Image 1: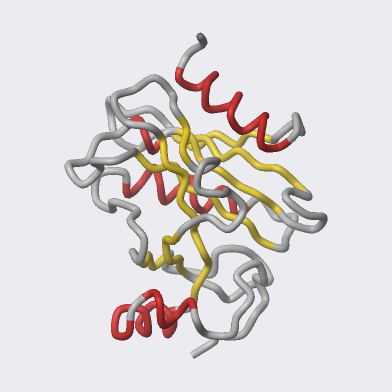
Image 2 (image 1 turned 90 degrees about the vertical axis):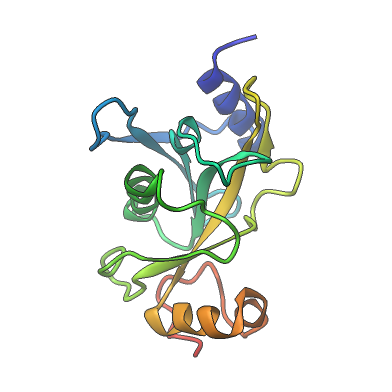
Length: 184
């Protein structure tokens, strides 16, 4: 049947058509915890896009996680692995503090990558994984649920706090564009 990580990677292999990913480990900062790995696919799902997925967040436990344990994903028009590494660092740092539920916003504290002023994220359904593809049975009591991380500006996170994720999502913006201006 395979180990937990083998099942997860097998699921990603099936979705990627067997494209070989790159792996960037992020060491644990707390004793007794596993690190988190950023898994990156260039030109997936389309040419010019970087797809990043974490592995390691779902090894933690939170009371809020009742239907599944999250892993994070990002899909941006860039070839800079800093985007995938950013979500891996957030997963490692916030594994016990943030449930990574839809609508959660996270201030990264600085621009996420060179050439972009985006400095935070909002969590929502991943655009590149359909509902069935975002759920991974790894043999645990709960499945892994892949959630999407969307780069945002501080003003956008404030808008989400005041008006909600649905109102933000309805605005005219490109979730893949890392050089876009603020939408609010």
